[in-house]
Image (cartoon, rainbow, N blue to C red; front, side, top):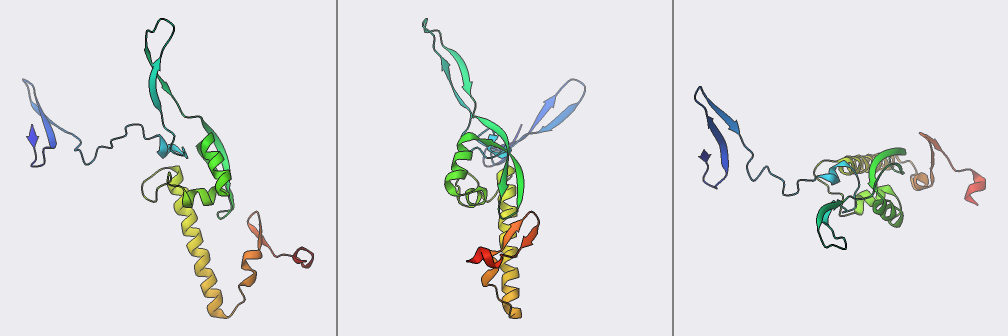
Length: 170
């Protein structure tokens, strides 16, 4: 067994009568302390699998697990203007409603990290990229001398932009 200076096992050499075979192993730096990784699969709002015991009248305990209430749902993103499919817990749906929409939840929630992988992180990065692009377009319009006061009043209908009519402004 090869051991590095920090105590991690770099590889294990398996010896048989016929040949030697070297198998790579993971180091502590590559190993994630949480083996479940369920939050990578969707928006779980901090919920994870819980473990415990079933305790009947006879007091004979048997191990069991409590899974989060995960649903497959399509949620609307206002900034991306599309329905995005997620594996999402019911508590995350409530949190999205409380925060005012999917985009606000992705940007403000502590359960959606800025780095890493997973459904939430990928969509969050798309939302941030789109917001930066819109900000850049607004700067370019200002540089050209265009009026950008009405940009916030533009109503999105599908993929087309609909200008507000005179009756809606009154």
